[in-house]
Image (cartoon, rainbow, N blue to C red):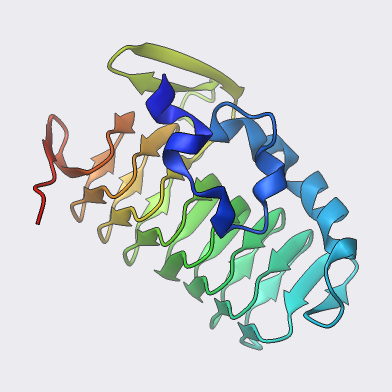
Length: 223
């Protein structure tokens, strides 16, 4: 399913984690490797550009981190990123260049590509957000199924088994998620797609689409 492969969803030139995806066909394959990747990459970062503020936490010198934010390693906070008031980063997190982690937002086992915005009351766990993806206020990823079985990715062509108990969502480059939306486990949203506020998303959303509600997904008109 080419449309779900790494190259179809993510611009790897827009993340410090490019090498994390080597050998991966689908982006969720790297979720189990985020922590070890940070531990390898962190010590190699330029000391002119990054401060190591804790044993496994590296923060770019020009990043803005509010005093009320909490960052648990392993974690990398990229150049010109903002980690705002009461943000809670629980480890295994890469926050890309110019990304925003906002008020009371919680991250766990994630890669945020450059320019990502999760600015208001978001939960993002076991997920990957592509270049300039944006999650509206109160939108979250649900990363564990209610019956605790392994997560799969449901597509029109069939089901892809992931082997993962915890897997939130993959948002491709330039995805817009409306306020108050829940992205159910194993959701994959294609490039340049938008999701209406207060949606409950499950399965895959094609690139260049507008998700209005379950069963109503339309192709975005060219401007």
